[in-house]
Image (cartoon, rainbow, N blue to C red; front, side, top):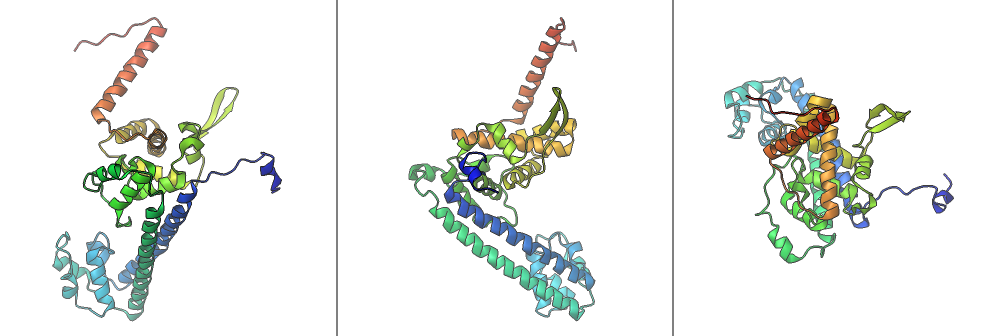
Length: 342
């Protein structure tokens, strides 16, 4: 490609967030790749156990939990007694010791024990690297825009005043502190939006930045995210309407946020269920992600905190809107709506 095309204004520059967020974005992308590389080794451990007829995955929801790792590490260290292994269960396990002991009666083949040991070592290796990456991310947060918010504002926004959200298993341990950093950097609390967790919020901020002036309006913003339909129009008629395939990480984060509110008792959950009855589940997720993206755009651009709306209030507004539309439609044809007598 001719480099002079940029000089003559024939090519538009690609989007890039603020320079101080680019380094943080690189570290977060690297952390995501480490999680992807670690995940196959969990499957390798599970397969090695199944090859020895150890049905640990049938009695534990997650073999990488506290009970699962205690048992696996004991097996690697040479313990073979099913009763002693079952005694390592956490008191919150649904299965009792007898059921776990029955599931841990196997063949103990040496080749599969070797595979189990190797897979556990690789899992621990990647876990160590993820922990080091989290430490570096924390250092970067401390260096980004340290004077953007006054101490008085930050004192009011502490972990004691934050509504708690359940953290995912692979989420960073310092979730509350990261949330405070994001509040300081953005000026608003994106985690207050239903469906957006701390990991999703930091992914969104590092991918889109905090300067919304680069997007003329929220429609351009949602189109760049891949959350707006591409309409193929001919003769004034829409022939095909579909969203384009995209690998935009911010758009994927908004889709994950939409998935997490499908059954939630919030405005976005009610909107998803209404869209699902009309468009189907796949398009309803995109529509809900589009709505959440609009809220994030307005919060960042106008520095407005999220104010939750009651679901009943949302349903009432939608009902009033539908009634107003029907009255207008009826008046167009010379009719008048009347309330049916009960």
